[in-house]
Image 1 (cartoon, each protein chain N blue to C red):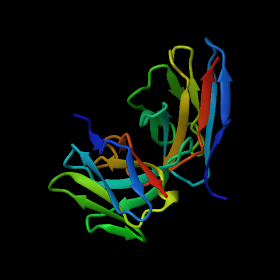
Image 2: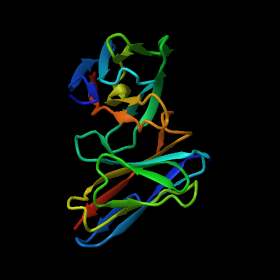
Image 3: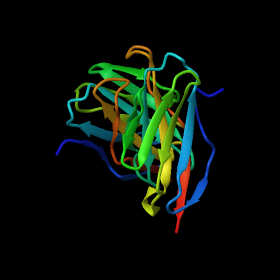
Image 4: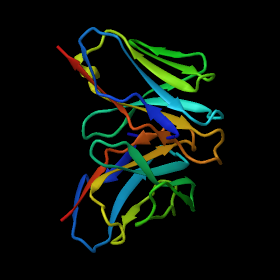
Amino acid sequence: DGGITQSPKYLFRKEGQNVTLSCEQNLNHDAMYWYRQDPGQGLRLIYYSQIVNDFQKGDIAEGYSVSREKKESFPLTVTSAQKNPTAFYLCASSIRVGTEAFFGQGTRLTVV
Amino acid sequence: RKEVEQDPGPFNVPEGATVAFNCTYSNSASQSFFWYRQDCRKEPKLLMSVYSSGNEDGRFTAQLNRASQYISLLIRDSKLSDSATYLCVVNPPNTNAGKSTFGDGTTLTVKP
């Protein structure tokens, strides 16, 4: 089935550790995105990528890093520099920026 | 002023009611618009695109008013299953101008 897959669904991290969230899509989409959502809040854009080997900072990129070495994959690393990383992280993809985006099921990250 | 603003919620309506949400945007050159539905602790799912001529899908109607810079979502004959948060999305005028902007969402609760 075509779709976008995030893993893991739940993740626990100790303070001071880096952690990488996986996002894979087999929709042949050029654009991919990472959003963060806090309880009762809207989506905030962390990073986005319009094409392989290119990515741009979103509104809240500090403390995060990404790579886009393959069209299908857009992993997000939450670094120890992110002071409040506990949140729901959503990955999405679209044919190109500005078209309908489709989301993965999300990863809930908790810092313990 | 936020780039995209939605009606503050929550909206609490009885089954069978008609309810409408608005979403205003600040960039008059915005090109494409979407409505998403997000259930509690789930990922957003595309509900419908918003075209200049309006768009209807069963009980749902989306409209665009470029002169006043807002989009709307009308739900007729509300069902209990319509209870969710509805997010509007506004896209920039071209693929190089940036990324989609999500509204913070409007929460709808349909009661028996």
